[in-house]
Length: 188
DNA sequence: AGGAAGATCTACT
DNA sequence: GTAGATCTTCCTA
Image (cartoon, rainbow, N blue to C red; front, side, top):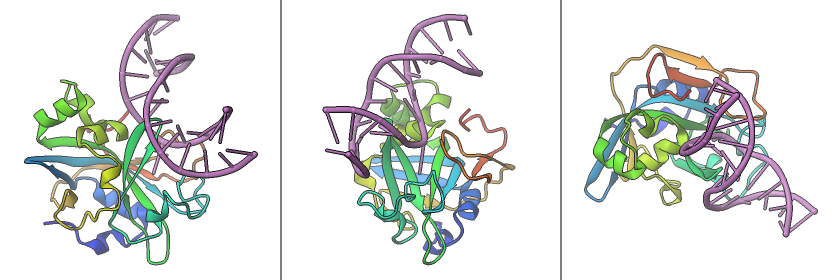
């Protein structure tokens, strides 16, 4: 079952936490790639100095103001980072997916990454995007519909830890990063 | 034209 | 484990 749109119409931190253990599905050609989400981060709007939305509406970040449950993909340091727009009504925010554990299509991921080591396939935001062939073409697609990319519900349970966000120059004094404790695919 | 950005790779101490 | 080069867009001047 695919997570409904209203799952994303809540506080980004809650959505980020509950996305741990859910299944990210990517389909292209005749390939199906699946991974368990094991690490996420929440980002807010203009009050969040690390957010892409911090300077107000811009062409490339408009998606964060729009409908929830859409993909929001942007480039940093030559890497595509994969986000899902999530926020309460009339607010701004998104959840960054930082790492997944490969479930299906592992051989295809190895080809996409040109690596054999399974751990190295998806243990970081840029790596995950490469393994799943995520780039700008997938921007602004709904993840609550069965399409090129979407998120399935699951009953996988993890013990969830939290910490400060990673790589952020100006962070908020809150723990906005969530991860599956002890999972080897969590970055760092 | 220049710089910054939510990162990654490689090569070492 | 850290250090430095380099990755590609978008923003500001």
